[in-house]
Length: 304
Image (cartoon, rainbow, N blue to C red):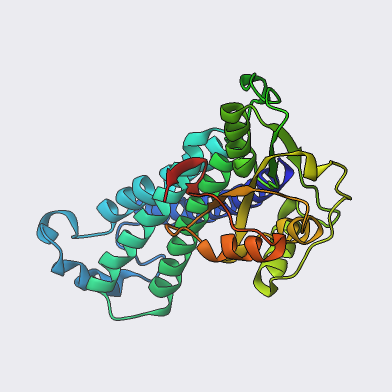
């Protein structure tokens, strides 16, 4: 899906930047420490007494040789390795990039213990935090992109002409639940399609705006005879703690045409969102016969 691909690509590119920026900087600093262990070339010789706070200082911190080797290994080679993996589109690069951001933060925590509070340590702690957050975001978006719904696995859909499953889905999660329900009951399947932008990164924010304001979103004309179905299952995502805008529009247009309905809601939080079910009841002019609510995170479902 373009939405997930674009978000993952953006996060991955930012992660490549952080791994290269931190990795190259660390290698450069390490090389200078190893080349001149006294630290005079970099103007660091006055900092050496601060290292005496650390264990075994009399053995390993008499100069900057050990510190240079440690910097090279911990923050240099590791980050550059992660950047290579990311360039080669390896999943390990995503996780390594995020983990090495945490490693940098821990490295800086040691500096906070050793040195007085200073700008350089503080800014690199922030860099490590941003790298870790970017790595986490990239891993989430990667798993979203990997999510796939195989419609060929559901052979019983359409066997019962008296039942209908209606759904709107941006990312495929709601579609999966709709397919499962239609296959279980033999119901026919109908997809609500919006005429507004819903895909891509821009679509994500655009849909969030509709969700926040509880607006209706324009949808394609309903081209199905709703009154002929004895029972309809409506499947919808939750947008900003409310019913999704396209499904709000569908329910308003379908008012008085649906005899009996139950609802399936898919969302990110561990709550049933009965408020969305009540809103659909109000719009449709009926009382729902059942409500299933699923917390979904990165394609993993848990019934609430």
